Image (cartoon, one colour):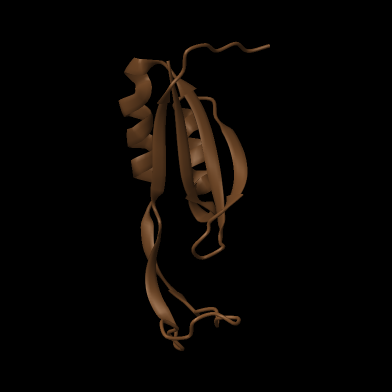
Length: 109
């Protein structure tokens, strides 16, 4: 058995949740926050048998898209201003960061 942990952008969470339900996979959704942009994320915890990992990974890949976003930089507060960029920059956000972990024991009550 495996535990799939997928950290995705909030914009993709409803689409992924619907796709997992449609494919008959259970998932636990946790609200989380990204460190770089301090933007909202959703972390999905999905327990599956070993032979279902590839199917779930395909569902995640199909429903979580990366996109370009323009962000305004945060000015440094008392820090080094040498690397500060004073104008908005375009960054890639979204997609999914996925961890697949082995599970030794699982019980549901």
